[in-house]
Image 1: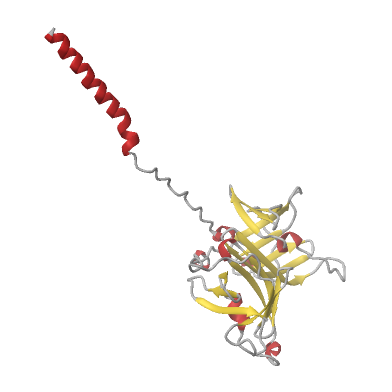
Image 2: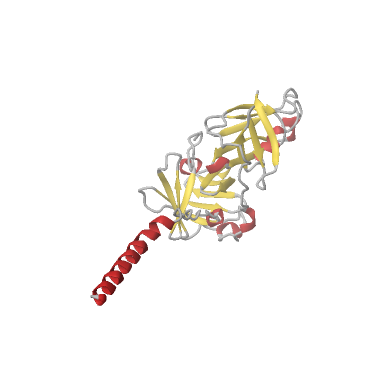
Length: 281
């Protein structure tokens, strides 16, 4: 009898231990911690190169794009020059001049629509793909051949350029409380000197112009988190003869980010330094 009682007590003890072991994890469990996904960094230096251009759905053509300190294009319409900028996956190019032209006289149509429409890029297996603002594929860029050499330009321009990674700086985020803008179209003046006559105007066709300074016009685009992309076309100093004020455009086009303030917009350098604040003109 004593043995039966002992076995019964042992069974109850084991049962209670089992019940505790099952329940304990639920009672003592701390809230689950979900690891934040790793942020994929996009390195614009991957764009530096001499690329053969293939338009979407087309065969390979004798069109090349060289992206280095400056931009060069070889196509059926001749040789073009310009500038470009990339911040993260955002891309902006501006063709400002043609070294020679093979198209019909008076040809006014955009000679590089695939380039001026490009708004973003991705790298896929050593191939660069350019997309427009609607995320539609424009062209693919591959390392394949080179344009012919010419007495009109240095041989180095038809060779692969040296990658200068230092030119693609990392951007500091916008300050706390400053939101990225949905758009910056409009005419803006320096908040601290609104009546000196200088301004910068952003148009809906992604071009800008100003009232003074060497940089009279160019192109603009917005990237993620307020990243600002601009190109500039130098003009003669005579453009500054009539109206040289605060030079607001010089600060704006050197900015890397733009944010919304209570009164207008604030433009920041890549290290987060405030360059200028503007208000509607």
